[in-house]
Length: 107
Image (cartoon, rainbow, N blue to C red; front, side, top):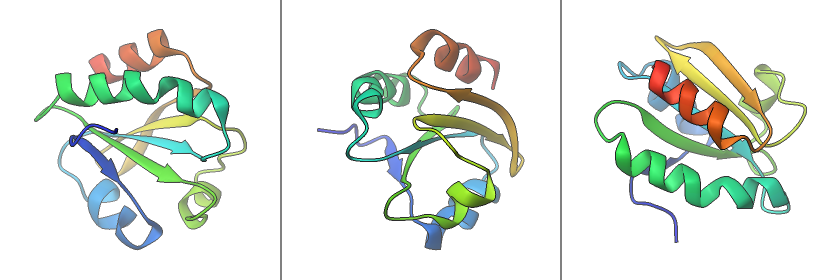
């Protein structure tokens, strides 16, 4: 079960919850069929729980919500983009917990 601190996004609320957020937001672009996406899900849950109030961890299913995946040129999943002040600041492509953790710590 996903952490209660993970924000589940849709195309309808992406702008409000990510692009207009005052806090940094790490968005995991993922899909149900993606093995590496499933593999890093528990790590993202832990990261979300450890960073409450500092960085929001969010997930966007690219099969169900395509607008922002296309806008930010997500070609491979998992792709994780850290947004600061509504702009993409850093990107990690693939299931690399070390790089993802460093990206969140830099926020």
